[in-house]
Amino acid sequence: MYERFPNEILIEIFQYLSTIDLFRSLVNINSRIESLIKHSTPFKIDLSCITTKSEYDYICKTILLSSSSPLHYLKLSNLIVQCEIQLFINMFDIMCLFSNLKSLSLLEVRLSELSIIIPKLKNVSYLSIISEQIDVSKDRKCLYSLIFCSDSSLSLSLNTLIIKLYNNHLQRVISYTLDGLEETIINKFKNLKYLDVDSCYLNDLKKLFSYIPNIKHLNVNLFPSDDQIVHQYYSIPCLICLTLNIYSDRVSKEKKAKCGARERERPMSLNK
Image 1 (cartoon, one colour):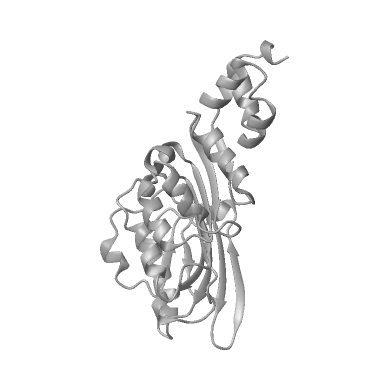
Image 2 (cartoon, helix red, strand yellow):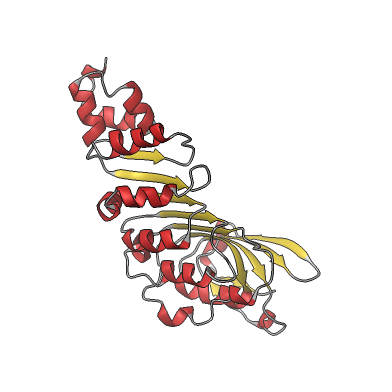
């Protein structure tokens, strides 16, 4: 049956299956199918649930090292296999491997690993960082600097950014502040449309708006900075969905603001 389909149709079908399933079920059918899978079908690799070294080696050596297909989706985690992300970095030339990467998800990643990975990202449109390994009281500003101050192509390609640092993320720590970060910003992230961050001071939110002028969806845990900031007015022309989880010493509450199609042409203001 496969022989009747043109290559374009087969590649389209293959993209609905995981890369691992393709290799285990179809790669040995015939030389044509094998060639299409290994050299023409974009790869989607999830290493976050790998539990054995043999399985890890199969994916890395049999699939990634023996093929030339572009890697479009990658998910790595240190949660199950300790130092998995560092092992991956050591095994590959990530500058080359990540050249066509579109989506990257990192679980329990360390700041040292991010400092290697982020500068190598050229075409990533989706970036998710979820970790308890990054100390928010010490490393949060460094993380934001890596992302927003990097001279990589992220500012041109990034559409969705998710940052979740669960290390005491609801405590009001002065080191959360991003003061001074705006002085080192190289480019604005004009294509960033979705941002989800786990902790931010209200003053920092104003700074973030200057980096992301076309943001449409914003989800943030917010800490009031002081009593004066509530009188400030922010114009966010493209924002259509805003979710604020506001924390203070006495109260924690969630506010959701959405504007419909009629409101999209008008600037949205954030004024507590």
